[in-house]
Image (cartoon, rainbow, N blue to C red; front, side):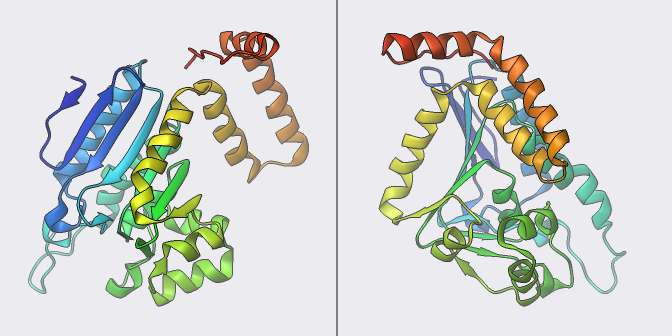
Length: 269
């Protein structure tokens, strides 16, 4: 896959000099809602990213005035005369693998939310490591409006991020959550003025791209494991990861740079 590849529902490019990969949902006329084509193209991109050792961070964003409005219901029309759609098959084929891929990326993931993130789009945001939203952006758990439950990991992410009372309220009432309140509640990392979203994302992406990638990924894995682990189990996990990382080139480089009072150059992934 080339540094800049052509698709119909997304755009994808890799900045070779920085190691920053940029995946943009690109159906602005439909608020970047998901289709089968979009899912297939995302899978292709993530496969390529896994194999591209030059990539050190993935930035996920949406084109136009929205981040993602969730599933495009026109892509799977439902009428009274139609056979009911198999939503379980859709989740098994598309949404479950997408969430798991993002949760297990070999590089850190950074999400830029420029507008509405609704339904599966709101849950997709939460599968990323760090999320920054524009002040005009908002989050909407829209599932109850069409007789469904939060999917794409929403029923798992929401209670962990904001607590059970707020999670159930967001899901049942389907009220928009402004970005500023989302940050205050701990749903996302930060909310910035609209004009500052792009430069903030660039700054964080550059910081992550120059950081020790393997250590960042292990940090994600350790913290997510800690949600369910007993303390002793978590201490054992920390021990094992520290053994691995302590033998890495990045650890040696980090220590040498610290002692030498210079900027480190990390290369592990």
